Image (cartoon, rainbow, N blue to C red):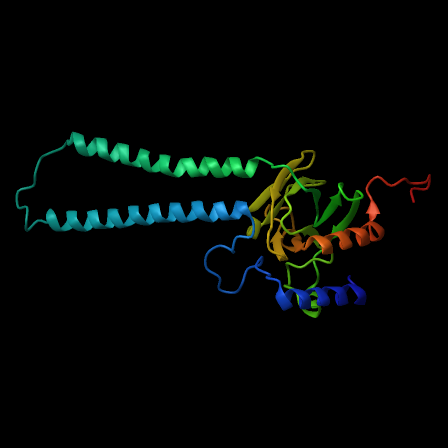
Length: 273
């Protein structure tokens, strides 16, 4: 699918990344927990996750301690005559008020994160991602309005290029490091979902509807994702590859891409060529 020139380019990119650029945006065997944050949204996602995990752990430990105390304190040997007390106003108020307080503690950062994800800041670059069965089409309206398709590499091609199988694509989404990227997302056939775990981004691609999200990756490297909406037999084979590069390298890539790829608004002749 790629050809020798494309494989050589990919191999050179991998060598460059391995020389000094972190490639944190992919899962690793036997990984526990989330992928490392590479964007502000993911940082807040991890922070909220850790807060809720601490709360749940505290509740579990408290309930366990309470069960052990009750089992010991009210065992038959210590209470041959069971008590007939059925109401305790203070206890009933406490077990109503404490869960409400816990939910408020969770709700405040949750709403803050939802607002942070939904509010699109002023973007430095806009990209359009179009889900199709079973690949992605990308458009760069701010930089010449060119478009290209990104297909998953076969396992043999991925191994030859030294990139992860089932995650690497023949064409990468390229963005500059430190730039705020606005992503417009839609689909042409069925529901898809554009998701990059390291960025904390996941947005459905819906035919006839335009959704949007954003990210800002500070560290150059390769970041991978996959379609996260069951979209058919090829659902597991439409990955997303985002290459974050320095500003100068991005400018050079844009200049090359404007020559390599077709314009979205190009003129066609009568024969449709």
